[in-house]
Amino acid sequence: MDRIIINGGNRLKGVINVSGAKNAVLPILGASLLCPGINVIYDVPSLKDVEVMSSLLEYLGASVSRNGKIITVDTSNVEARDVSEELMRRMRASNLVLGPLLGRFGKVRISQPGGCNIGSRPMDLHLKGIRALGASIKEQWGYITAEAGRLVGSEIHLDVPSVGATENIIMAAVLAKGETIIYNAAREPEIVDLQTFLNKAGACIKGAGTSVIRIKGVGSLHPCKHRVIPDRIEAGTHMVAAAITNGDITIQNVITEHIEPMVAKLREAGIDVEMENNTVHVRATGKRYAIDIRTMPYPGFPTDMQPQMTALLSVTPGTSLITENIFENRFKHVPELHRMGADIKVESRTAVVCGVKKLSGATVRATDLRAGAALVLAGLAAEGTTVIECPEHIDRGYENLEEKYRQLGADIYRERV
Image 1: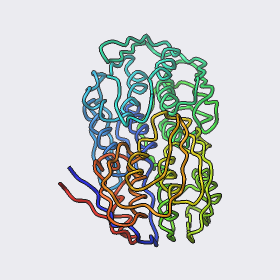
Image 2: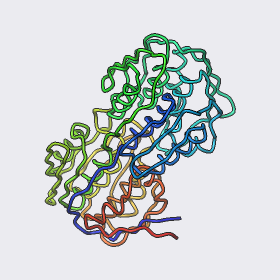
Image 3: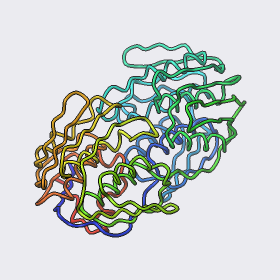
Image 4: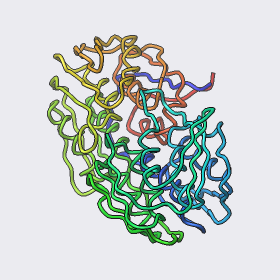
């Protein structure tokens, strides 16, 4: 078992690069199942979740190879076989093979997916969508079985703008007969990137990034080459790293429009943020103000940045309110921050954060991906030594995080227990 050791108190300063987006590359890897042949994907981060998805594709018969940040996926010999329960349970995004396999082969059998325990993320909207396309679905003994001849386009109204359901429905519909319209679709940039990949492969999709997506089914797709967008959540995490350490960081490889909700809140909190082209410069002077945050679907403030902002507000003077509207179980980082001296009270979906003068190093546990990132940020700012157990959660979504922060002046390293 590894653990991350942080000797806090150093002011971070310098230049840092953002890796490719985890939440973009995973559905794109899934979508490669629809494109028989050799697909080449650039700027792929080295993450545990990418390794799991690659293993899942190989289990299905694909050939996957990596050369630096380039992954080549040959899906010529993929088969419609039952998906490994062990692989499905290792990652929530493994459910993104449901739509592609059904669209290509007309049948699929997968187990219920796993992933971070941050709240209820049922498959009902995914299944509602593919059922509307004409698939018959059976749920039994922890497995989902879906079968159809050729899927048929339909109008689908999502009860909530689910990212995963939107992506799965798009991938199922690209080879369906006729037109599919998704209403109340999720609008995240990663869905736009998925549309871009599929359209390069010969699909006909319009509207990603809006609440209405139209897909005209085509007869087949072909392999293509694609560069993944930068990770907006990683960029936001680095912005908070600058703020919480009173640092001065230039963040490169950023699509600035994707991070506007985080920029707005940091500026409201008194942090100096400047954006130009694909670069963000964050400078903190030590003066911060309490703010209120409500997580919302994109383009609102992202739930994936809520734990990191909680860490920042825990050392911000005054009382801040954080309302979590996406996942009901996403305050697991709070008890760990308590161990470091934070003053936070959680009632239902709201956290009342009373800023303290400083945090103190402690031994804490990363309970999920973004909670782990929040604890790293807290450790960077804390007085003394912080030990973070279970850093494998962090490895699911951040590439070389300790090395990146060491280059900015952090005293952070990993040791094997």
